[in-house]
Length: 317
Image (cartoon, rainbow, N blue to C red; front, side, top):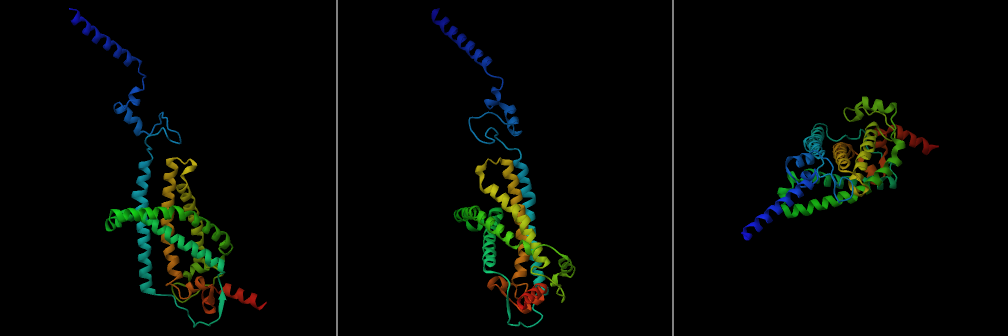
């Protein structure tokens, strides 16, 4: 009889201990113990909890704004950027096939005028080379998985995309410094005036035979300067936020910076294609000034006659 009673009493005692433990459990044990739908509802709403981890947002398991950021990046910015760059290339190609290079109206005089100082040319080409590297690496990071990954294979793709990431992160701050120096040095030439309005009304001399008057910078160059200044500073600022993640930015800040950086960069890339076209194959003699620092007098009189007259007056006085 004793052998039967003792085990039954032992079972009863264990049951009482278990019931007491359940009653002593805090009311939020369901959440802490990963129990059911209530826990996952809290997680999906992005509510914060308690954790031993330190730092911003350490107690928030899911950032509910992440899906909104993904939607804007994948559904709007990524396709829009592709259309903008591809469309600009298509328009420039058609324009070149229909109009061709803008030639000089008169033979070259053989007399050269200094247009760009050595420091200006060094600054321009430094910014230009960095811009091209950052553009190619950025496009690879944004679109490469759709076009390059399958062609390269996993191993080569992994090495290439890591190189793009490192180049983008480390060369970005150098581009910021070069752009800031360019803005400070050239801003005095890029304020709009009445001559620029007339220049725009006459189509900038690209179409037809009329060559509207222009000073050191024409209206189109001033538009490119201010676009590069305003949008470029947004791209630089957002890029620095993304590059230096050790200043306590929260995830939502990083997501906004990412969208601004991508949108601004794609705008600059599309616009830069027009700048590159006009400065190279689009206009005879335009590239020579930035290569050597000097332009022919015929070119100066045709494209920047007001500046040419000012140079001649200063040389005669």
